[in-house]
Image 1 (tube, rainbow, N blue to C red):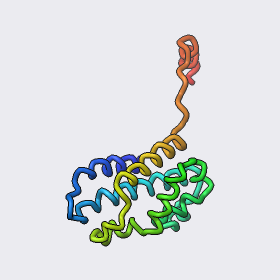
Image 2 (cartoon, one colour; image 1 turned 135 degrees about the vertical axis):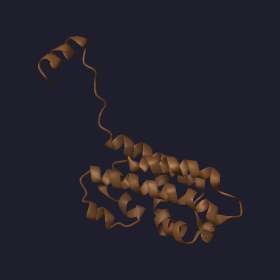
Image 3 (cartoon, rainbow, N blue to C red; image 1 turned 180 degrees about the vertical axis):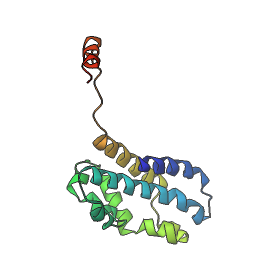
Image 4 (tube, helix red, strand yellow; image 1 turned 90 degrees about the vertical axis):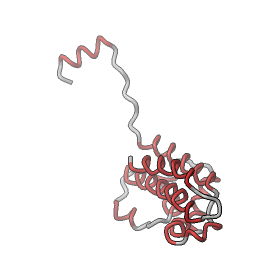
Length: 147
């Protein structure tokens, strides 16, 4: 899933920031926000929401959080609050367009905690149930019947 790649990139970028240089932290802030958005989009698509509807939310994570499909994730209250503050503070736009405003960004440990929780819960919600291995006696029968 594309969101998984952004999540991995976000964790990799944490080591690249340099103290006193806000623009060096922008990628480490933007990637988790974008990954969270991609996870939420994947969940909404999985639950049957139209792509055009999802695009209409733009980068507003709070709107996505209010949908019934997103509520089914049962995110922690602190995570829900953080998603709302990311949208209210327009952090996505600030990381893209104004890295000098870095003093207004969420702490990276809070951002990665939110990303990791969203990743785990969306992954669990959209992954197919694990296949149960058939006993050897049945697997021979299913192969013989062409199943």
